[in-house]
Image 1 (cartoon, rainbow, N blue to C red):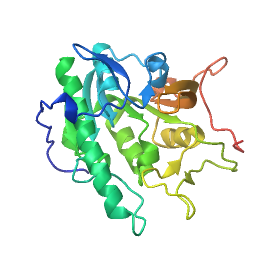
Image 2: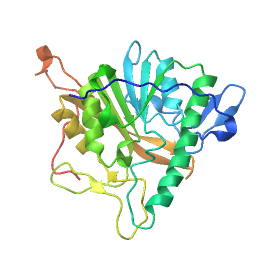
Image 3: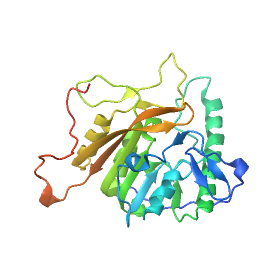
Length: 273
């Protein structure tokens, strides 16, 4: 049981100069904004080719609201969850770097939140926001048809805890999208730690291959799974980056053993290469 009451954030009305925009998009009276990713050419694939019409959607990590707006325009009732500024980030607590980096992340998160609310205001969005940890979401938040976890899990120390809580709250479908870091050679689904003693990684934790996400989705009751491998444009590097969208769907009891001939279901194949 996850007890407690839901506290939705009060909308804010920030100045443009105080905003940071993660995804590239067009805003009325402003023009094009966004510094890190441009998903506009392939956003449907990034979101698992999901039909959002009439669906209640749990969005983890809304950034500056581009995906929120896309889903709401497609007919979704969206509730977004993001970390509060005072929490800052799931940083790697390296000695001598922790406090400085945490303060930097808090300032960045404040500007990112401002970017979301600026987008919310300019596009007239109706979505709600909860500031808190996903693992702590109370049962009173209710069930969702769909959960979307986009470019989030690699930043979470408790990545599987985040995924499992989303699976508990989603009744139909879960979509996890992440950039592909590198292949992992292992005889079973694994995650690889990104920080090492010789690098300075502070804001990322895991290289999570799609096979591992699919395995956990299946464990959590999303029996029908598939992976959409594609590319998305990273503005900061001016390169098309390999990305996957891992999709899990619950299967009704009367179709628990369907004829899989010609299906697109994704099953974990071992060993992983």
